[in-house]
Length: 52
Image (cartoon, rainbow, N blue to C red; front, side, top):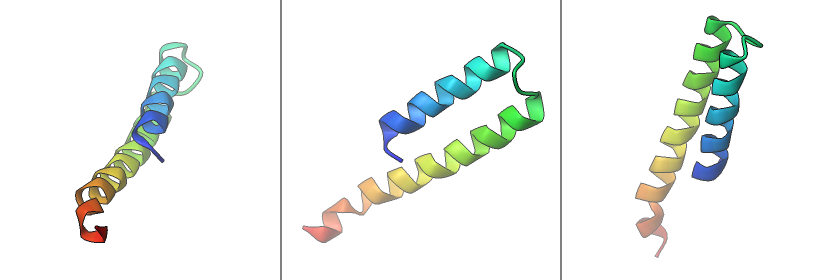
């Protein structure tokens, strides 16, 4: 996922929680998934210089 996709998913997740469409545990689980994706994206960007 790109940073933009992660941000969009985060906002969608927050809206679902605010609208009470998902419970708190589902919200937290999704936030951890998104955090993991963000960490992968950061690692990819940090290691980009290795390829050049």
